[in-house]
Length: 126
Image (cartoon, rainbow, N blue to C red):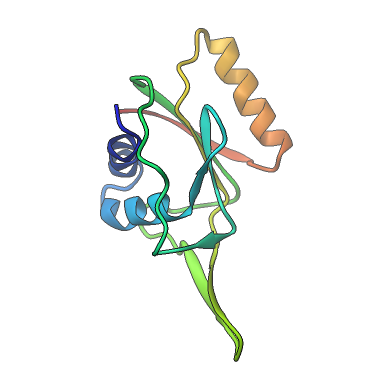
């Protein structure tokens, strides 16, 4: 499976009302961390994450910080000054594309994410 196809499916599973907006946000903010993606601190509409092959994944772990309404998310805000304009990411998010060999392995990933401040999670089927 290609990463962009995976993110499109994840967007549809997380947001039934605005999957296209979430997909756009994901391809422009995520960075590959080997086995999972993590949102950068900024949204860049001119840069997309590489569209590489990933293993077929059916259960996806998504960890995030705070209460996020994926159907009506405020994903970023624009900070302007005389010198620059940057769109700051407001959603701290990780998406795991690794196949977990056991429930214990997924629990370990959830606990690790929580130690990093990702206090919410969803397990979605795509």
